[in-house]
Image (cartoon, helix red, strand yellow):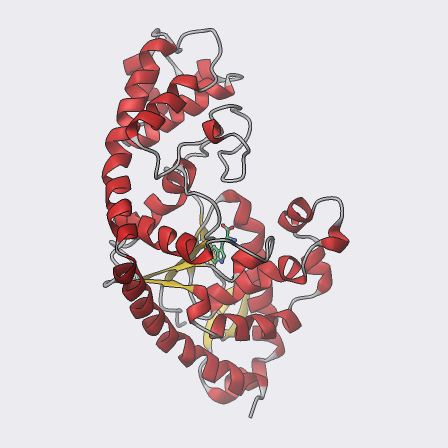
Length: 353
Ligand code: TRP
């Protein structure tokens, strides 16, 4: 039995400032995956129109995500870094997937329900179709592995459903063009054109929570800037935010069991652990019994130590727009060359003349 060529694909939306949660949860993982995989990392600017149509500075936002990728250590020459809108295959394949996906499937997407809020009639058609475009992003390259956060798991299941339906409905055509691969889906043998993507959710990536409320995820859209550490924050701002982070009145426990029911303490220890590549137990072995007044400065120092080289490099890159644009253009051209291989075959399978 054959196998699809392993390929990692992921996307980040260019809206709002990147923060520590994005870095520890996503970008750092993207960096690590480069060593052992072929990787494509995409700034999904077309997705950015789904919730909000008019953006004041979409170009700047797109550049800043690309700058964050590169400043964090993604190598745009060995791998591909580009913006979605530069490759028209994303929109073209998304259209075909809109005709593959069923309305019943889309109606189950919890992220749509959350984002559309109470008045779903007023949400854009793009927001509704968002997961279909996301499936196209991935399958346009026939990517096999997708590092994402927990919240994107349902979208990846939809991506598999779309791939599966396409593979089954077009099975005869796929055989006819001779570009399919025999895989097993569960125990069923399938002659597949599109792979069944696997999420890469595990690993050390912690859920980084708000500094103001340990039960809410750190988020770009939180009204309080004190709730998050932005990648572009300077050392002083980082220190201030850590100092003001919400905690309870107790000191740090000596064992992880002592973090139960203490979401803010758990979050700060988790952030320290992630930034230092240690386990929470190791962190508590060092800090157990101490007060937050002692732990917070250590956490602030560590955050600054890890983030400041990235921030510095990001600022340098953002000052040289032409350089970033050239990197994205080169990535776009290389992505497009791969995408066109798929699109030629897909047009043939679907029956476009
Ligand atoms: N929906 C993803 C998010 O909000 C972003 C995204 C768009 C993406 N296309 C993708 C992630 C393809 C992985 C693969 O995080």
